[in-house]
Image (cartoon, rainbow, N blue to C red):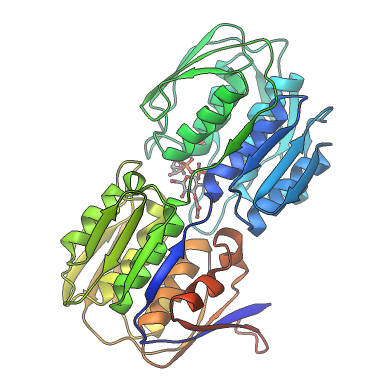
Length: 424
Ligand code: EPU
């Protein structure tokens, strides 16, 4: 296994090119299963999760080729079985269910299982497939869904924590080939859902309202191949923005959509960070002291859960008390104990973390627990004095394209090393 070793305390300066969005790419790749024609997707980030989705599609019988930032997927004759050994390893792979069911009228996809950030049920995905007229059962750890023909319907897809992103994606994909019109109420409004709908419409689907809580899908007989470029990764962009602010530097992010991150821009300004928008670029600058702010994670357009951990690191630097409340995933606080190793004072009260900011952070050896927690630990290492070693960085490679290289380019002293002494 590999680790990252960071010598912190150095302000970051320069430009970062934001990569394509992981969470837009994964369902778009799955959507290519809906047609027997080739699809070409560009601005695809080079990430292990994306490669993994490619492997899953290959085992389903699709032909997947990658060249640079482009992936060509041709699912001429797919089979409908999503294997346990693959699907259980990546939650995002559950979004093969909708396309397989729509295309083949029957799908057998392994239950994705829980994960370190929470229980992550799939009841809403199943509710959606049943509402579209599928018979759904769980047998031997597999979701078995079948139908003679999916039928359009009106359904409410809100759950205990609000809408579901991949659930909306799954139902939307299945409904493209259903007979008649489907109306999804309480749909997820994330930009990744709009991106998927745009791709599906390019394939010949008839979807309206994506990006709002009500999505209308008029079913069509078949979809065709399409070319599409995915949106920039808003979570990657924010991660670099927080790293820049944390180290007290000045960084310009290129190739991003600032309108996708307004909740974070607003919070960072409230904390005393200058966030200057200039067409498709964003310059982050911090010269003065940070102010504490309270943050509550919410579905889009609220503050994203995927940057809660990174924001917590920023708040450890702001003298005073910040309260960070997690409303999407109940156990997404694995980074709290690791940040304590660097000297942060954070206590957890139910869904909230109380951060007493302003104490100096000093480098230590820490362990990455999940993708975004790992990014937070890297930021903490960049702002802490001395050396920080972040172990188990395979989590980072799942969702950040060449993170160490991009950080080196803006002046970070960070290097990838083989993890020799096990810390678990
Ligand atoms: N939920 C249910 N039932 C369901 C599905 C979800 O109760 O059937 C609950 C979840 O337990 C959670 C809430 O609904 O409390 C929202 O979960 P959602 O379904 O929206 O999450 P997801 O679609 O599985 C995607 C991203 C996550 C991101 C969340 C929330 C991908 C591949 N994953 O997951 O990204 O945190 O939306 O925005 O798109 C990450 O990139 O690090 C990551 C975890």
